[in-house]
Image (cartoon, rainbow, N blue to C red):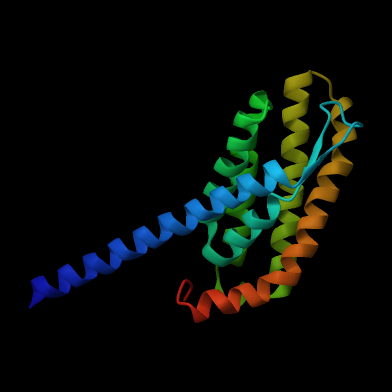
Length: 185
């Protein structure tokens, strides 16, 4: 009897591992696609700058499925974009910065008491701070100039602001759908 219970527990754990991998891989792909194909290059920033919608699936994945999914989807999804699109120098910074953004959003919203609009706004605001500070530091390291990175801050704010509006509009129905389909408890 005890062996049957252990086997059943292992099967449930395997199912949740497969589910985690599948969901996380889907959000890595969505983050990459939204970054690579839904973007506008800015001529004003020191590095050219890029405003994209990759933060939308990143934030959705982190809010719905937690900090691990958020960190992996953000870091790998956007890091992969950097590697495949000529922004290779940025890939290590993106992996860390956006990984931390995804982790933070997931961590701040993982408690069932934090599954509400107030906490979603707080989590996305925290991600915004991480993005602005993280990429400012990255640009200082890359360009060796503490003034030049200031020009990329408005683009980062717009990028997170647009993503926040979209996510805050769609997250409640997506949360309900994820619960109804059994993807989320």
